[in-house]
Length: 406
Image 1 (tube, helix red, strand yellow):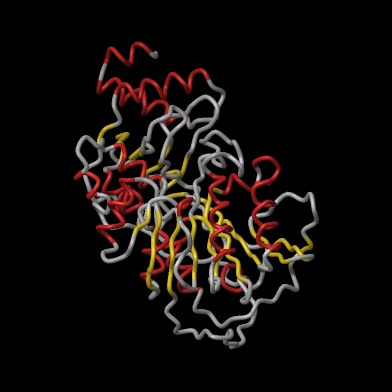
Image 2: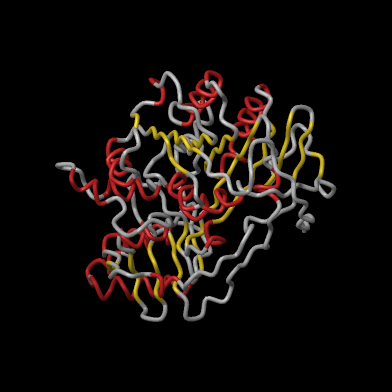
């Protein structure tokens, strides 16, 4: 296990541990990164987001901040200290089309580098966020392309996969944070802290989350948490994970407001979307599922204030062709893997069944029947007691539907 290095106070040129940084957010979504950085004392100067619903949320939640609509049409970004980009994951996600880093959606990250090249002055920091699946998709081609682009421009980079559960949220959400700078050292910010993973294996009396939309090829499953909230599912619609409340023997889906809270937002953060005539509530689910967990960004914002240095003595050489690890850093001619967990911290979090503040909805008979049917056709090791509970749940709601999958 990587040991936290001794702290030595060094102030980076032009920065102090009390500096409030100026932020510009591209692909801002509903503002998860920017809100987290704001909560850490930094200020948002500019936002850009294509989705009309998300722009309405940003306008309501970040009053007075200009929100541009099309990153491809931006001539320039304002002078800021940090440029953030939770760029589209559709081509890199396991639940997406896996077209890769040059797909029509994820390929828009090209615009980030175009804007950096034209920025005068260049932002001190670049923060990118995306799904962890991109580390293995096409043998890590996406990360290789990103780091090559950074090194061509003289950046030192560091990345780490982090889990939202580490930051006090009952959601198993693993995302890559990639931080880079041409003048500063990103390594102590992302890599110095390591608590070690905290896994819950005894599920007695605890609520468990699972994807009811799956059952043949994969089952997202989490004890005392939900699996990743997603903007879409394998059946093509935004759908919240189910929650098996073993203490009440119910199978439910969380209220949208609790989904917002599970991402670290206030309840009804996306309520402004309801002002758009004809806009379905599912669009709010999609926005929440695509967001960055606020406390994760808050942690980065606090770490950007650090004066620590990084000790790489225990890091291993990362050679060309090696699989991308959970954490690494590099610069031109020098790449290293880092032995750290996805839990840089371990903030206390409530049990999932205690976290839910709003009345959940019972998983519908149709959804339950579909889950059981797919489970019967597949070869997944789904807990037998969950199968029994799902059958009992279905029978209670609809005896006819239960008979159809018996």
